[in-house]
Every structure is written in structure tokens, then in C-alpha cells.
Length: 226
Image (tube, rainbow, N blue to C red):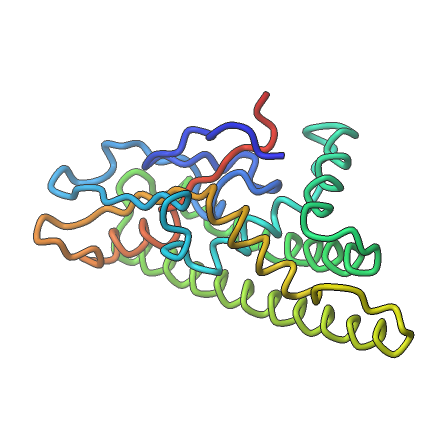
């Protein structure tokens, strides 16, 4: 499903994030020279250290990857989504629940995406601290939405497991476990982070570093690359 890295560095492409291309789609592309030179980059490669990738990042990538964008990629994107969800489970009842939650998540997070894009278009590459605080607030809202969606998905899959058990149809691993295992084994290992760090070593130096680390600091393999 996933083939090539899509230009992962400090500059992270958000143009195709509706199918899990980039991290948060919260801001868009940043020019390298927008980061003060005294800040250096620390990086994390999920292929080597998947435990270092936050759960909310892994779930966001997955949820976005499970929404088809036929307007941009054509009918073949439905095939890509189907292939992606089949890597998690072949149970049709679980597939239906997962795709429905992913669609709802995309509808809700797109509102935050648009708000952040407007801030970026108006204020980049020299945002004020007020703008940085607004972006940080959007990030908190985004992470809250991810947690809510994951909790809802877990509950729906658990309820589905119970129904299958009562019908004598239970077979193998639980639905929620399949998703979390896929996040760890497949998604996190394809994530790369780049977090600006102050020369003193403080990765949380000021709003800029904090925002870069939590909103823009993650890149992903592009499922649409040839």
C-alpha cells in the first residue's frame, strides 16, 4: 500500500493528507528559512523506534488513509482504501465500522484543518505568538478529536465482538486489538519526525518549537506515489 516517502523533512506536504499522506494537515508547507537558525532538528524514525511515535499520530495517519478521495485520485482510490483496511481485518462487520468512523473523523477534522490553513495563509512565514497560541489550541482540539474517535471505534468494535460471540461467530483476535496492532506494526514504522530543538537542548523552547513538534513534526509514506 505504502510505497515512497513523500518529501519528509521540516517541510511536510499537507496537500494530500486526506489519504494519510502527511501528519496533521494543520498548517501546510513551511519554508526551511521560517525557522530561526539557532534552532536545530532532532529526528525520530518510526522504523527504528515505533514506541517513540505518539499513538495519536499513528491513529490520525490511519484514519485519514481510510477515506477515499476520488475527486483527486479517481475510482482507484476506493481500491486503495479497501486494500488498506484489509491489512487490518477481513471481517466485513469490522470493516464497515472502521470505515464509517474514519469518514466521520475526516469530516470533523477538516474543519480544524481549514481554520489552521487560514491562519497559515494569513501569517506565514512570520507568525506572532498569538497566532502560535491559536495553532497550539487547534492542535489540542485535534488530539482531543482523535482520542474521542479512537474511544468510539474501540467501543463499537468491542460491542461487535460481543455480538459475534453471542451468535457463535467469534473467531480469532478482537477487532480493537487488530487496529492497535496494525498501528504499531505498519503505521508507526512508516512515520518520521523532525522536531526543532533550542541549542540548550530544550525541545519545548517557546511556542514555535512546541507547535512544530506537535503539529508539523511528522511525515508519512505517500500511498499515491508511483
